[in-house]
Image 1 (cartoon, one colour):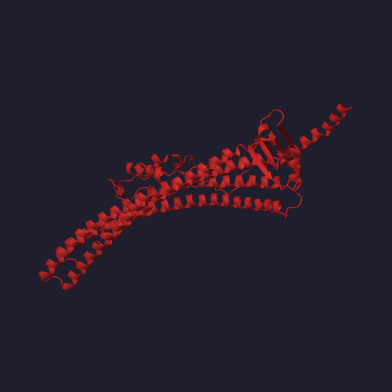
Image 2 (cartoon, one colour; image 1 turned 120 degrees about the vertical axis):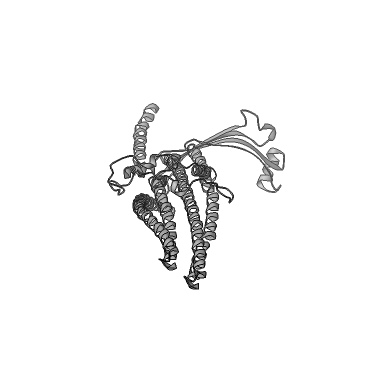
Length: 473
């Protein structure tokens, strides 16, 4: 009869366990990437390859720049801080992997109570123990375990792993930004070098014009006003030199800080015009860009973690099954503490806890988790949209700067010829001093503009490389 009753109960237990398992599987919604709007292509070129497929050492071929980037990856403090976040997240993952294991605690206690002689405890101790105090010596091993009926612990593990991957992608995003900042800072430094060279050359030219004007004034061909105008032009050019030298020092210090070094000079042996810009800045397909961008990956992992948090918050409103077991040695006399088996004891407890009324705390956490998940969806979509916008803007800048550079280079050639001709005509008394000064000023500004456009175009190519997801390890 007992056997039949036991089997009769099992008939109910088996379907109940199956039902719980089915519900557990149903509650663990698999993550699906939200739909994001993407253009069919960035350019008319159908090539699926992308410059982002190149390693940074292949995209940046200047040895000095390569050394600066390598140093930045190794010593930049923003990157080092990000690596500490990864290490902390890795420890969280290790802890999450043990959530489904029982918790084990070892405890040893010794307690002595001196009761009043006139109290019930005091009289009892005196009558039965022939002493005025009560002692209790205990050593036990406790085991507690929560059955992962609804998959909560598995979801916590997955959420922790997603947060770890998010921190890793965030560090990767910082690396791509550091590489971009170092490259653009280096190109800015080369531009300042070029502009300083231009200013010094123009200063020598202005000095020649000033001396020539003075000679013509002494000969009575020009007035004092011409000498003053030539001297003013000379001083205007001279002012550029300390200003550019100041900018060079500041840029060197900025690059040093980016590479985790004390401010100092940066040795370089290349001119701005010698830096090669890849002619084929292929972008590939937009979907590939999304899969490369570390900041987009970080936003998606944040969404995955938020999705798991919704499941965890929902499960917290369901019953939880806890099992505890405790066993060890217990005695009221120290001499009998380790008397086995007389001092052995054991306790096994099973409990099911169902939250009933908790001032709406669990429901509020669930609703907040849902709202945070929706926020993560929006942030992910925003990151994709920003990435597309950055690529598009970099493409436009590179294309239009290329046109401007070509036109400005042509203008520079014309103005250099105009300056040369103006000086010849001035010596032959066929041009005024104002024509010479104007030609020199225009040529100087055109040279400075050309160097600036070359730097901007280089920076646009760097922006495009980073925007496409280039610079990953």
